[in-house]
Figure 1 (cartoon, rainbow, N blue to C red):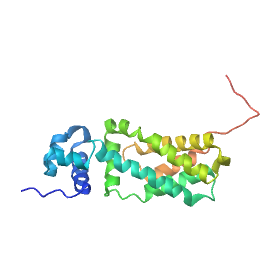
Figure 2: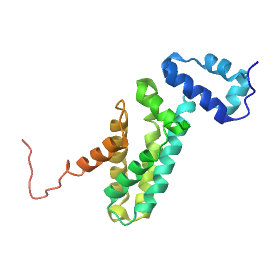
Figure 3: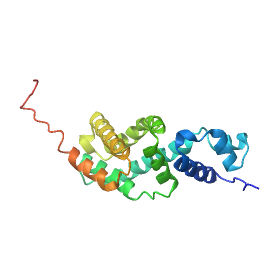
Length: 189
């Protein structure tokens, strides 16, 4: 006899373990429902879609990063973004649902493309936090551009298999040196 599901957390645990064991693309919704020991209506009472079993955790991670950003008001805008994102990654328990969701993303290119939709919400959250803390002179456009670059750097780095928080921190440190605004020099060759 299968245990009764009493929470979304149980469904998440079963689904994330299956995704990590067999691969996201290889696990069907019907298999998830059977593994959870619930009916189809009960399953969909807890989750809106199969993707949501991964993406909901990734979305909450973005909210956590935005909250951490406020703790770094004394740094430059880029430094605050680096610290907030890197601290969130460094504190990520890979056995937690969020940690498991990121591991699924790293191993499954198909769900990674769906996760890209989350960048709009993350960009808005980070931009709003940067503006509120008066980073980049409170310029909303510059804040949004910086947030977009930071998120892109995070996604690019974290999509690599076995990426670590140290890798991410190095990428952020190197990124500061990639763009140098030299208003007196133009190179249009």
